[in-house]
Length: 277
Image (cartoon, rainbow, N blue to C red; front, side, top):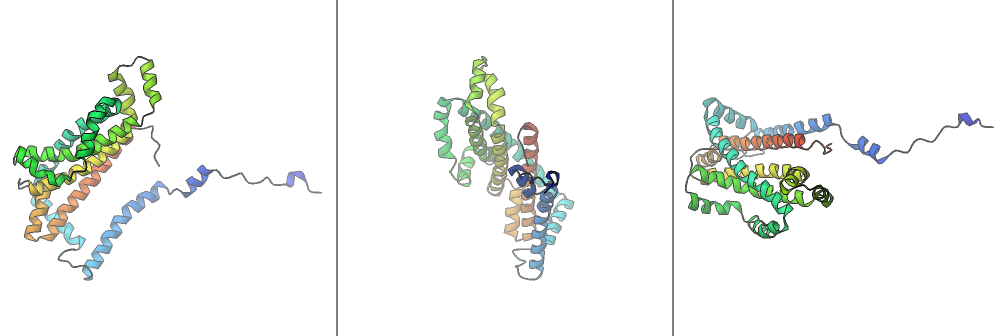
């Protein structure tokens, strides 16, 4: 007769959470992949370029591009151009982002404001932004403020749309509770609408920063200022110094990555209640 004590209990059921944890890569693995993927891309590019598979006239080896970037840095040209471009990007970002957040929250809180502004935003957002640059040059001339406002336009639309979406998606029960406790409109803005929409606002700011960088490149190429990263890309193309052109394109890529990291870092600090994997 089988001893009851010898009977083994069936294994505990594996929960969905446990399965998900087993299948989810570790942070170390994710960071390793994030570092290795661009490195492998550059190594492959270098090999194909040196082997003649890629035409070096149009796809110079990454080592040549980095050498051109180093030369720009040692001569001081890179820092001079960066001074112009970064100041334009920061000013334009602030001009576009601040009113976008305010209007986005107002559209989410007020049906009247939403009815008045949403058709305008929906109509203007799809308009190709590069096609509007001649209007900006016509209105504001060839000044720094033209580039500021052009960058601000690129930042404005992603931020206002994401902010409105975030406020509109906040559960109505929170607004009801605030109203029952006699909270005024300003109080509701700071304690309900803004925190509730913050994840969407952060997403909008990240998208807006990227779009602002694109608008900066277009404005500097076509705006006639004669300086900045965009101008250097266009000038290098005209002079057929392809390594320098790629070098300044690389600057755009690095700055875009840094902006995404900065906005993401700020977003994690402002939304500690959001679970991230």
